[in-house]
Length: 412
Image 1: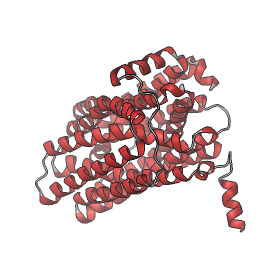
Image 2 (image 1 turned 45 degrees about the vertical axis):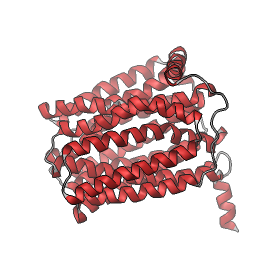
Image 3 (image 1 turned 135 degrees about the vertical axis):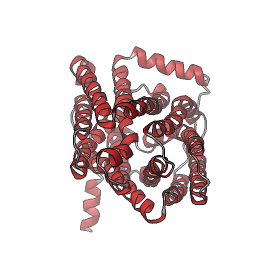
């Protein structure tokens, strides 16, 4: 009985686990965690496959990311449009099974030794299309399953679950590559995606919007005009875009840092990738505990600044475990920033535009690979530490400028 009372207290309104009161959110959370562990195992597998097994370069890594991200940028408006026109649960199940098929294909090609770089390009593009269609739906389902005062807590716990998998996934991926080969990462990803699809099917159906609304391109144009005409939303969307362009691309080149800067192997690469997740766990816990208290805008801005500075500091170290510690700190800042930005985007958006604004958020993620291709070419020319440090200085400067100049963010 005492344990039951304690659980009720933790899930009471305003408490650290308040969003877990909602049954659909619990199911969605576990499905997202299964998806995330598969995604991070695949990230480790693809990075090592391209750079080590296929003898690729930083530019090749950037091109793989670009092909996947281009789909996010181009197809996300379609995903946002369909999310409001068709039943969301059924769509997400279909998209997740498609992703499992792509992972299975990668596993078969890698196991048979038939894999080539161009095949990686093709599967990356296909996976990007699936992610672009599913991304707005998965974001909206958090809102559908919780809403109200528990939304910020749900966003934080959703990020916390994903970041927990960000710790576990890279470690498992590195171990699988060392034990059975790169194909093991893709086999595990396929299994995780099937589990995620099954859990998604357990959700209650989410009925489509009642009104037919405008077409895809007109819908996107309306969303852009809405964001441009609302100064507060403009700053929120800009702060979603800035790290996507200037900060996130460094993750693509962690294999380069592991091999060429820190002189490690696939295990070291796994440690670096997991380090951000370790810090993100702590950051997500902070947001979950403090959700609903005070203004989110200032916290988002300063957390983004701390993220930029931490990644910059990472580029200066030449010791693996010091690098792991610094990336863990970066993960704390990243988790706080991203949870607050996502919450502000959903809570402050006009309900009539929420789905389309979520599609814009997914589109900002699609800009990362374009920047990563440029960063990769620069790294091949001048080296990873110098290039990434320069980008972090630019990102930190812009973040500080917005933090000091935007009264809107100081008020929300």
